[in-house]
Image (cartoon, rainbow, N blue to C red; front, side):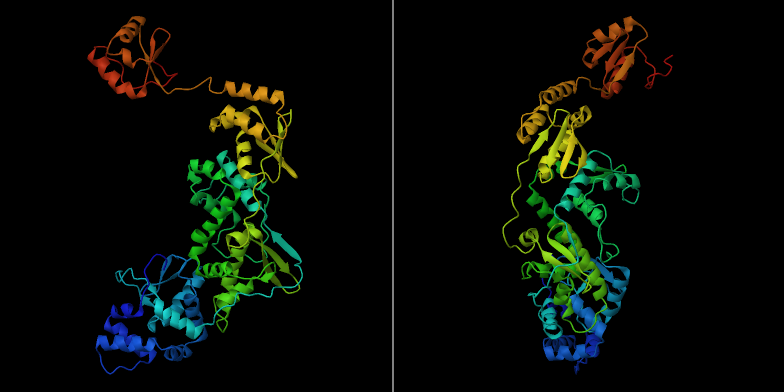
Length: 534
């Protein structure tokens, strides 16, 4: 288990009650001529260290019981996984699975537990016990039950009939989602999903509005939108507030990061927060990090067979594992780590490594090319044309002060009074607006654009609002007395006419006490503006 110390077989056995030890010995056919706990422990330990004995025990199991043990053995300890208590005795196995998968794990894990291969971890109460295969026993069982996987691949010949490549579409669509959330246009239902109108508004601006699915995604696994939302919340760029997706200050910092760093964040989220809960996908991802082979189409089934398929037989968990692994490749495609292809003649879906995947996942090759400097053209009619390969950090700065009109070969934005006002409200100063446009523009800015930007910016902040209280006096004389009084003067912030004084909300109780002590005896309570004052 991730973050916990290794579990040794001897230590686990010594913690079991003698009744449990006797049951293990009986199920495994271990003959011990004494009822001593110490002798029982020694007999079980000695036999469990002998591969021929373990093979003899496993030969008496049915195929699916051995398949379940193989699945547990191949759950990589390098990946932390959440625990689900299964069955009587609190057996804990991998999470992220559907109900049918869990029921089968529970059913077949009973045999594994009854034979002493699943033992409770030390340091927990009986009620909270988590069961696992001791590390030294795990290695011996692997030698008996499994063969070593191969990482080399001959690959498929030719090109696929259909291919899917994510390019930068996934990151761009995540960018669009964050921009719309920043502009306050995405609303949530009570279940945490987007309202239909919000989704339709978002969908119109996505590069990939509909996902191409050659194999249905497994139930409960995040689709592309759920993955993006989960990532943004994990990075604390988005939070839910009053049925809206609200951005935080972390959004500004993340938008300023380089494209390469953004992809790194996405991959770490996939590896540590999503895949970590699924031992099957975690095992596949670990395999892919060490896979050899360059530029070839490889069937998706190959890493599955390399990691799990070398267990002889037809394991019950293989079809569902295939569906989950396809989901994993689906996300890797969106990240532009691999390209997916479908070979109709062979009926296979295959993948091919791309430079970004080589760099991030397999730690090979040079990083993808550096970002190009932002280049945009500002027209006298306030339209801005931007190349489609402009860095997202530059587009974010443009989104702050302009609105996207259309996208095709280039992005077309428009600067308006409202968009400039939005940028000012977001904290962008007029100097920062002009500096960005000047540096990024391929030519000098049109004079009318400069003039209007300055004019609109100068209008910002000329009017402001203050939340204050109005103290209304019946006569001008009373208002004058209070305003000139040494006790009241520091608490009066101004006047409206000759009978109304401006005070702060926080001083209301104090002024009320001073008035009563001075003999003015004001009416209790605060009257809403427009209500009868008499």
